[in-house]
Length: 292
Figure (cartoon, rainbow, N blue to C red):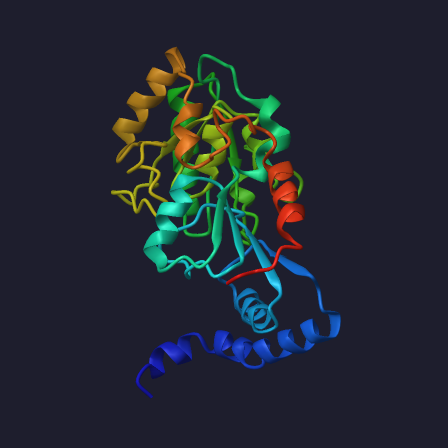
């Protein structure tokens, strides 16, 4: 086998693929839906369901649910509701687009448009971290922040899927992802310090200042292009982070317009109405004959 080692490493995916398309086809033949809405375009079951729907000429709608990368599969839905220009640019790099694309903004942000941060100084900083981040490095950063800025409140937030022992953070202010979503967490902060995560975009939309710091790993991976596109300020070391925090402690500028490239609703007439825009478009098109 040419890719034997990779097959061994991902045997679970190979097992999951087996029969997925056939089962999706069976279920759709039985239920015969008029249309299917997808919030994911690359998981195995989503791909199998998409192929089965196309086989049966069932209309498909894709609603982007988080930041995307140029490593996603090409768009092949009847309609694709993307958040903004950034997603469209990246999908164009993924391959030929066989969907009618509509830029709609970020639906999950609709109910938080009145929670925009208007503080003019950094008084509270959040540190959301993911499964790849070293807990000891996070702990050291929090201790440094508390020593350097005694009056700065620090809130840490683990990734929702983090099952590691977090007892070392028991004395810190903690955001529990099982009880508080990302926007609710961000509403309690003036800025965040984080590595690669789509929470940077959500922070910018709330005017919470996003600082990209790779937790002592050096240069930014910039998986989502946030550094390249000017959404975040990149601090490559602790000295640069210290300088930026000192500046924000004096004055925190309004940076919401930075998110416009990622969220088409910013500065538009449908700001805060992305969900309604999608619903209206679905009802408008669901009975139209798909010419694809």
